[in-house]
Image (cartoon, helix red, strand yellow):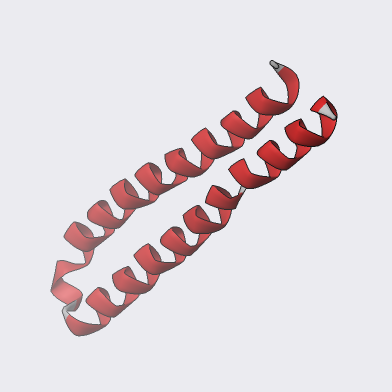
Length: 74
């Protein structure tokens, strides 16, 4: 019973990974649209996109870490 609850909890925790993937896709699609509209702002837009990518990826890694903690720490 406890093992089943751990598996369900870890599975629910990994749903955030899908959200992180969608967020990363939105960040880079916005980057491409911004560069297409104003190519002279490429460097500034790229720097902002990399910051957004790093923060979004960190959320995904935290979700993965929580899933692993649920599986192996309790």
